[in-house]
Length: 368
Image 1 (tube, one colour):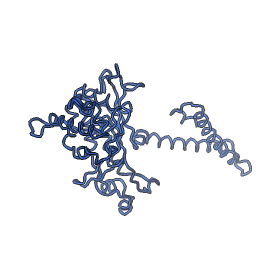
Image 2 (image 1 turned 90 degrees about the horizontal axis):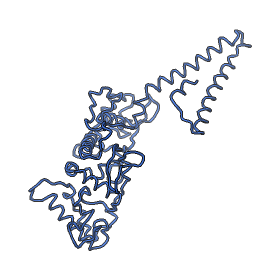
Image 3 (image 1 turned 60 degrees about the vertical axis):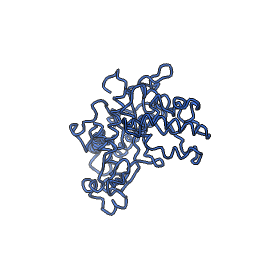
Image 4 (image 1 turned 90 degrees about the vertical axis):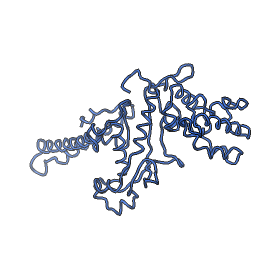
């Protein structure tokens, strides 16, 4: 966020993050087009054998014949984002208040079971079942380990959903979790093990922070943050590219280029900022697999040629000015040994610097 005093946990920023996330998830890469445009040296058979053909998106969509490129943990795509605290539910996110956000973030570390409805509400039965069933245990939906707790939790969820998502359509549904309670209700009599509902929560400070100590808190409650962090995990599908002499993942590379563009970050594929407007509310930085090459590729290639040229220049200088024309006193071998000593000394110095914790900088490339 450009404004240093802005609180990135405000509803408008969470909603904007969701909008950007949806745009990234909607990206589609045509594997066959990638080969035709950029990898013509790879044969069609090798491309097919590597399973790079067809259309690819972050998540699978059988209706549109989209294959998923994400790395899966069980049935779910691997991802880290504060949006997971809100179940990435558009209905919930668009109705958030700051108090709802505060409630969800503060409860998140204490959550032991996956809640069928949102925790971003002071009325959530998963936080306090007594708000709907006065005789229930407050943690009935988190304990969920005996028939009474299960029955009370189910009743509390039903009453909550009757208000948040009325079946008669008298108002818009505010929680998509109320639309799919089949598995949750099926386990009420103990027919489904408790472990099915278990949830693995991440530390909130890994996805939101205001500095070294993480999110700003006051009296144990979330107050503010100015940075959000997220991650998209891609599975590797590689093919050998003869021109580079290495295995590459062309589909992942193309998907990352499109994702960077959606975030407003240009690359060698999308060099013009006009094509990659990004967000009006959020500023993004990224560290994708291709980011290092996009940022420093040209500079690295330039350094390599300059370094090789400098060694060649040293060799020519030594051969011309220190050598005689006859084969006995030419000292060509000595010139080569001198260059090897300089190179190995430089490498050894870098190693010693790393051992003693000295930082390596770009200026060190000029030493040889």
